[in-house]
Every structure is written in structure tokens, then in C-alpha cells.
Image (cartoon, rainbow, N blue to C red; front, side, top):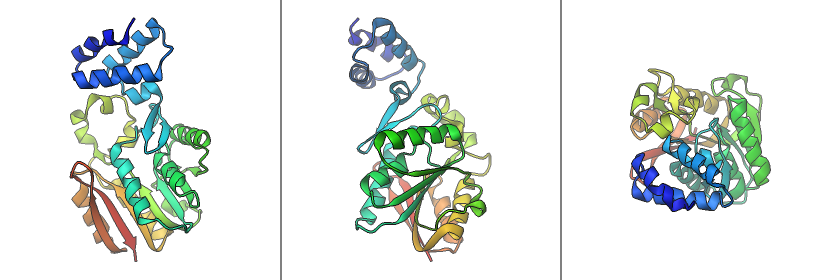
Length: 265
């Protein structure tokens, strides 16, 4: 059975013609030896709105092929931008200690290590299931990163090295907004990686500030990804903490305020 025969099924299930054509092309590239029954199974998963990255088992991220499954968030283009901002600001050959807070698939930590192999990159996550994915990516990509099973809420218990750079894309979607999310996000990606605690949209950013206070060197840099809607309140949180020399907003490729960079006093 030709893959093109499935295009109408995808369109009828809600995909645009362009999306359906792209998915058909991806399936042809990723599953060239699939049988008719296997192809039908893949199409059924797409019709059920399962993200293609979970079906294929990977997501391209900068120049890396990042393994993903339902235990981790699918890396986004905005997060690629965050990495590019960090790399542009740190072009030199110097080594530094970097910490990724809430690493998930490991995409941030691994992309930094890939472009700055002289850096010593560390990453934490609360979930062993996520760290298993991150460690698999580290091994398959031959990019050594130190991964730790550790909560973002326990900065005072950390006994690791002092850092020169911290970065995080924490859970920031207010839980009450869950009904508004795309079904492919809401029903398939891990809620633990998406949502802040109910009525506490800045909870994880507050936790991150404690890491900065305790474990970031003086003049070290914090880099954050934020929700566009909550960006200004997050910026004000950083300014109000009085622990930074400067706090700067950065715009994403869609023109939204998305990132924050802040230098510790």
C-alpha cells in the first residue's frame, strides 16, 4: 500500500493538507521497511493525535537526534534558540561548569556539550524515567554529561560543584490552562514537565533562584525559558530577588518575549 493513500485519513482527522503531506514524508523516511499492517498502525496513532516524535522515537534538536518517549517533553524550536543565545554569549575556549535544571531528555545539556566540549556539564531531573532517556542520549551521542536524580526543590541539599552558568526550561504552564492546550500536548506529553503547581505559576522559578543564591558563582549567568504570557512576572521575580547585576529579556523567533538572562552580583 502506498503511503499517499493514507493522506486523506490524516486530513479527515484534523491535520491540514501540508501537515499530512509532511507526516507521510516523515514516515517514508523513518520507516522505509514497514509492512502494510505496521503503516496502518502508525497512521492510527497519528489519527489519535499522538505526536510524531513519540512515534518515531526521536526529535531533531539543532544538530542532534534526541531520543524521546512519553516520559519526556518533546524539545521545541524555542529551546534551540535558547541554546544559540547561550553559545553566542560564550564563544571563547574557556572551560566552565554548567548546570541544567530539569533536564528531561537532556537536550539542553547535550546541545551545550556538543558545541562546547571543554565545558563540564551537569544536569538534574526528579524522575528516573526521564534520566534514563537523557543517559541513553548521552551514550548514543557520545556526549559526556553528569546526570543526577535530584529535585529542583532541594537546592539546599545539593553538594555538587559551584557553577558558572545555570539554565532551565522548567514546567511553567498554569495547570488551569490545561484545557486550552493542543490535544497532542495535553494528552501525550508528561504533565510533570508542563505544568506549574496549581495557583503557583512561578513556583519553579522561585526554586531556581535558590539554586542561584547557593550554587552560582558571583558574576555567573542564569538563562531561562519562560511562557510568553508569564514572562513579565518572571522577569519581575528575578529583579525583585535583588541577587542579579542585570536582567535582560530576549525575544523568540515568533516575536514573543521568551527568554531571560541574568548575571549574579
